[in-house]
Length: 500
Image 1 (cartoon, rainbow, N blue to C red):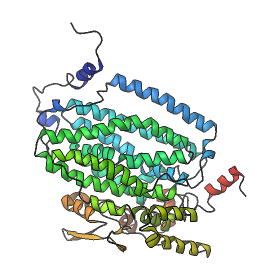
Image 2 (image 1 turned 90 degrees about the horizontal axis):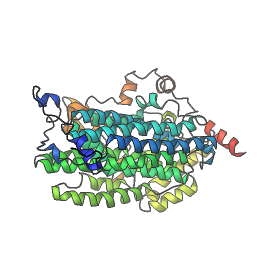
Image 3 (image 1 turned 30 degrees about the vertical axis):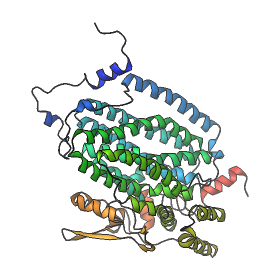
Image 4 (image 1 turned 90 degrees about the vertical axis):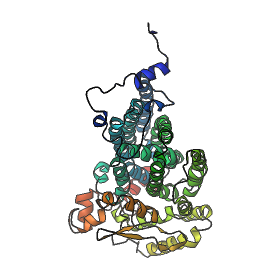
């Protein structure tokens, strides 16, 4: 006779083992059609282990407790006009970047894990994907609720969902997840579960949440803390994925290594948005992008790949290039947005003298040599009433869809550009990494929806930039974008604070 009360281990086994069934009159390959086409070989799904062993009743209990605490704090934040406690109206633009660039990707992750959870033959992996899918949907909802308070007082929050599918720079995070979701189930699990959630997630969430804490934004800090236990499970799932694949069959190793190379590179390109946020968009700095990269990848990631070396895994390809790029990527990204501030969904500005000095101290080998003169020139132009805006549209990388803003690391005065001819058509790339990814799957990337190309083809509204911004992007020119000085956000902020 079975025991009336089961322990958590037995409950988890009933959920993830005894719930499964054998196929008697249907072909198992037809039930899971995507499990084998990537070349991955699974010999025994029962070897899958989830260290958390979380059952659904426990999951709902824990999440409900977190929801109560989260919304109590968000209500208190709203009732006490928490937006007045942030350090500076410039800070709010970092939240706009998060809401437009990151939050919609939580929904893509939710859809991706829901789909992949159906396609994996192992019931333990399916249950883990189901829970992560629910987590990702919850993260989107809590982020929107936390930031909805700012929408009452600041511009640029109202059309984030509409902008996601249209605005030029948002094609970078969107294409990252479209690429992952259009791959097979194991590639998606490695791309999002391992490369992003395990290797790179600390470089996304820790800077944003720490930056929020240092700048008086307790709403953002709260949803970050509420999501942290979910992220711990996600990282565990990501590590379990890669170890499981490598232990199942030796033929999986070269496939897994190829995916690590690809998604490490794609992930670091995406994180250029976070780099400029850390170095330029936070009035109160937490740490530089260079410091964050050294702590969260070179130290933590280096230890991880040393552990994985016993499986035959090496450091991701082009890791040495990224090590050099940590000196440059944030400056080059922010200059690009400053020069194209009239077509961005947030305000931009020239760093103050104190901030320039901080950047000089953080980047002693590169900033004064390459970037401070650029900002000094921009200040001179602005003082003359000639604030610089780039009137042209940038060329985009066919793979990561980032404008051609990066330079050669051995010669930072030379733009980095690669090209490759496929079926008589020439395609352009920002780096060797993106060019290599294209060559591996050209049929996939030739279909990329590149915003600048679409604008020139007349598929994004009227012929004038103002028409595109107003009718296609749904941006209010001069209100949602352009320079922070004199913007409605700054004017209202000064009124609230009693600043003349």
